[in-house]
Image 1 (tube, one colour):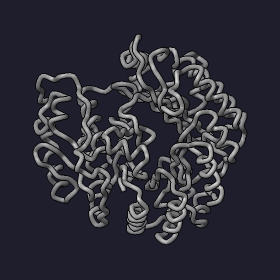
Image 2 (image 1 turned 180 degrees about the vertical axis):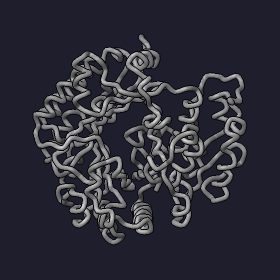
Image 3 (image 1 turned 60 degrees about the vertical axis):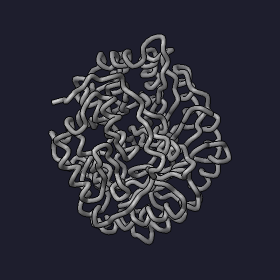
Length: 483
């Protein structure tokens, strides 16, 4: 039951104390081996497995109207899912279509136009796009002309912040992009990019069917810098087949020498029961947990020595990068694209499988192009599930966001914002929190929960304690490993 007081209007969340190093990190291998298990990544709360078909188009439209009332203009983030890839990477768990036929993308753009025509009137005069992200699949599967067409349509339907004020990012496959395309992206307004690398070791690349040279990767980075991109991020994966500590060390040296602004180092989640392409990976070639942790430990130490700070979960950044600055300022946010610099901005997702977060709701588009096309031909939004958050969901979402971004909870702030008494509301969680405190993951002093440096790599484990729906739900095997 909710232990409530009279709740005032929500107040802003304050940053961590100035004397607290929010970006400190300690690697404790034995602790990770003992505690790491399966759990959500908390790009949303409740997590997507709790979405349901009862949240329909009428519920979606009502939530948009509440969140974006007439006569006001609020910030908006746009995500556009481009599902196409030229070739298949065996590790990939994304919603994708493997083809070399560009005409498939032309048809898809026709239907994105239809979705825009349905969505844009709901936000007309009420939203300004301050963030844009193209993800996939491989967004640069689109030709330069197709990319231009898509951006023209988006700008025709939405008011965009100027380039120097907005964050406009795109995921890049360096194998498929020439410097001329990077220049074109800059002209279209993109000012941030994320490059997939995963590993430069030729044996690993062969094992996952992604052959990518250091030279072509560096050429894209150089072109991005030459054309004014503000932030360049590189994605790596540890736990891939045939990976070794020595091999990944060489990859890290090459990546650090390129000096990207941000790095994401993801744990490979081998879930062939969910992702058919992963069945082409020989499980016998996957590194043992001990080796995986040695690789992660190496990455943490090398990046720290190179001046990168730990932002959270898989993310590292240079101290002057906007992500690191946002975390120190207490304005870091987490959504379906990972960490974001804008605090709690609403997100509208377009395209197959896209998940929107608008107000106290989440909604997801259908996953397949045939169903997507059919619904749009019928004049319907291509939604197939979602969820309206109750007050407990909203409270726990806010709390988990703070943990994932700030590594701290101030009980007085939560009590003032939500009209609760922390120790009463979360009475059932106290024993589990005390156990993690005994393990040195966090500290509790009656006024504040502080995640300690040795607990930060296990932040998902800490967040799971506050996940009420997880406690009531199915086995954890449906989720990836927390480390």
